[in-house]
Image (cartoon, rainbow, N blue to C red):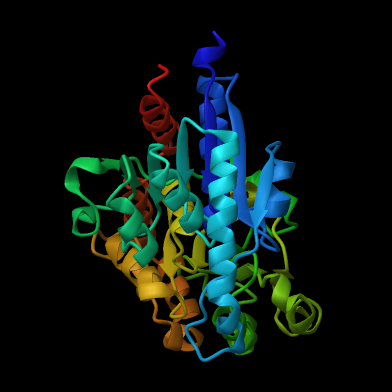
Length: 381
């Protein structure tokens, strides 16, 4: 039966939004076909080179980086790195001889998917965002399948290739029912206070960090329950993930100034964090949104303006149009994001409506759906 053994190459990375879906897809394929041989390809110096081996998979790296949108001397070396990456990607594909190649986006994904398509190997694109990037739009013309998480993606890809699967997420957040108290206890939070969770991503989000830092008066005002007991908000606490780039700037200095605020550079248990939350403030990356849809928490999205094609704003608007989230523009975060959180905490009707609407968009079986599409392409069913 060795001729039925699958060989699958998965490429993507640079951020958690590309790495975690890639690992989730591999895990799902492994459940369906335990004897599958995997190889990942990522970019040297990026998080996938650490995270993928920790997940138990082999990975090779390409020496490639993105093209800087601002004037930068780094762009001078971009053509050389791209050419070398294309040659190395071709060699990896030729030596590994995969049955199918899956691309989740990121620097390495383009050269590897291109090499596979030139070699006549079927490719599957996992497009996380509501607005496809330039590379995926080009690759989509020759891809066998494109797995998407948003409606109206036929504007970017051939309709007959699109499969609506949703975005894969880490399995630990799939069932948070009954874990609210456990989450509060895990992070040392007060069960008598309402909890705002602020997530800036693994690297951090300067806008969200500054908005927290500059709102000392807000947390002082709501550090104790209102005297008349009116309002649902009561006393408020927050757990704020500032990111590794900002660890020393915020964790010690700013937490001391902000009552009932717990600042952390890293979050080791996202499931416990979501379980503890009454409302979540987050960037609008595809992975973050997919997780929020599954955990069903009222969400305030603050899209990053520093991304290709402003795709985070488009991701957020796709939810806002369905009454599944509130949007605060990046430039308004300092003034509005905590006030919006307060509105939700003080209105059971609004909190319930947002929670139910966002939960309807969750796709808990996305990884398995993509895995089945990939296996079908191998023709070794």
